Image (cartoon, rainbow, N blue to C red; front, side, top):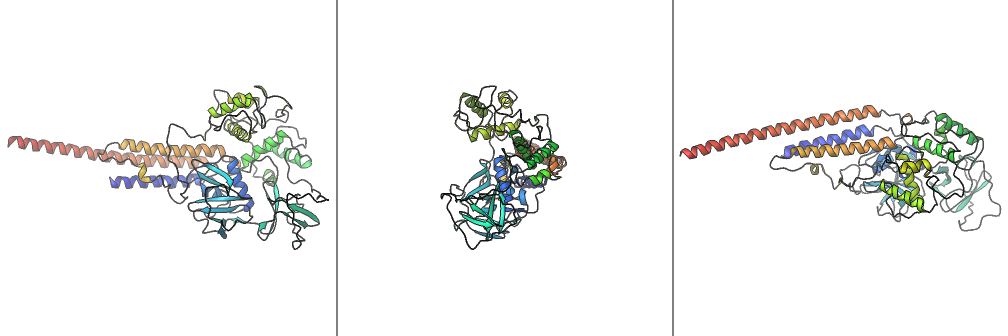
Length: 522
């Protein structure tokens, strides 16, 4: 029995290692990155509803270390030990975007302004919260060895501009740089877009500190030309953005030079396909848009084409009805019925209020994404009809109530098995040598559940094939062949063991019959 347990444990280990090798190779993470880039990567993972999968290293399905590794590569097991700099959280965290956070068995990403993102576990998936309210109890911060951090000068993060001095971005102060005075609020955001990202401060010795609550200066700084384009922007650069989006197949509207709702929706689709932060804002990610690596729009059977500006126009001051639109800020019975239907499909799990808030908007986005609709967060007629259709897709990330899955302990790290699940727990003890078929079935069921879960999430979240440059089909076939070989080996072991058991039982019966015969004669 002990040999059988050891053999099965070895086979399960091979399955785990091979699965990590096959699926972990799907995405080739870059060799290095920036602190702001890592922070935006983590935020994108949260807003895109990435799922926690133990040992996961594919965008969309990651564990705590996999969230960082898929962005910058480098060390994965001992990030703190390989870091270039570290310190105690209790002593204070530097004002640096993209720092790593560490506690025994777990890592996360410091976003800035006291906020963090981490892939926490099966029950939580991606979490975004302040350090003060988090129960994680972070011990250390560290600078990842594969990430470069700004020490002096400008850095752009999440559509805003920050200025670093002595390794930290400055807050509640001002600087005169190349003749322009910039004011920085309590979060470190610049009041003006810098005209030259490589410029440096000319009065770093003479600071003019101010509080964000103070009144504005008499002469407000003059804004420089746009570098960030969003809904409401206009100009030649917006035309360039629209032309490029049209070339890639995301935009079908008029090249008007106006960054309207249709342009924003098309840009969000491009960001999602390229694996960028999905915010509808054309900032530094325009470099990807204009590059030869920009992904083309792939139209699937269940996917609707991006709609034009005319189709996305929202009637003003119109009460949402069955044929109308429900959007953020609305409060009526239509919104309540929408929330009830979202709850039935597994996208909405809080109290039904009839108020279209941010949670409802995110639930609508998740439904639109799962059902191949344009992801806007607005319930238009097409979304409404799809929501109440019999063919509406349920939430693929919702856990089935009828099946119990092993819960991964959030205390455990990426280099060890979860505390609540061990290899021996997957083996059913049977001293009477019966029920081996049930054991094999349990092993196969758990293997299929993990495989199906990883594949379903990878197919829905991984950026387009044109960008990721992966060979998914070959890797999947290798995985299935490997599983088939191992299952055949298990079947042979069970067959041989049952055969030996049957022979032994026959031998015992013959011996018992012979003994009884002798006893009768005597």
